[in-house]
Length: 263
Image 1 (cartoon, helix red, strand yellow):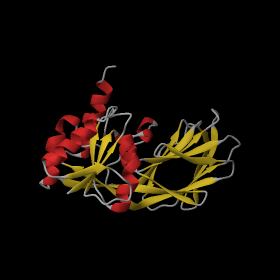
Image 2 (cartoon, rainbow, N blue to C red):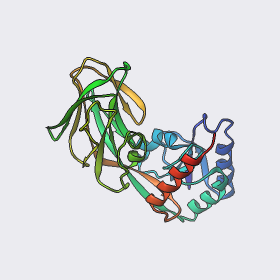
Image 3 (tube, rainbow, N blue to C red):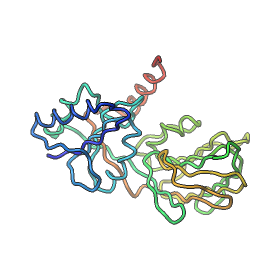
Image 4 (spheres, rainbow, N blue to C red):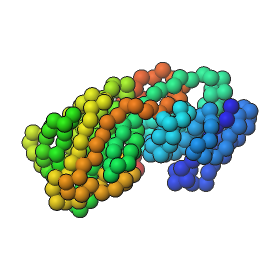
């Protein structure tokens, strides 16, 4: 068995958790090395939080290599274990005592290039002013309004930015894309959930500048009259799970623990 360890140096400052993974791997006869995109591994071990996992999710989706997340972030919806349980986690990998969970990605087309997101694709003001948006699904206009931005997210992303903007929580295996406006200047606009293979178009119809962000990473500007197209569910990332705890009980545990955390 061979694993690639992807460690976030901001979360794992001195590399102690990464080194603990290497030590446990050696103990159980597992080959471990620093993760390199394009290499073949049996598992990718991510050391960090959900943001760290987002950086390698596309690699997992393309290669079919499952991700085991070790949580060093704040909430860790996508991670499975803590640094204190590294040895037990690798032992279970070696014994094949786990299940795999599949999470879909969505596809954005912007300026002729394709980008994949595990969480969300966001159009957001870059000027500090509201932007004018036009939203279409399957060519049909859904709404026009001014707002701070707009989110198109996967069910996985429904517990991230979209949730903060008032969107619904969606079960991870539900084949949909959620559309959530950010601070719309209207009394009637509400989040909308559409089918997973719908063709969605988000267009900047005003003069204020906007940026396009894929899983939090800027991919370019969305100038007046330009749009980004979104569809999805033709690629999925795989995640290692050790228990049969449901998504909903995990959600409650994570959000309650996060809300109760003291500085």
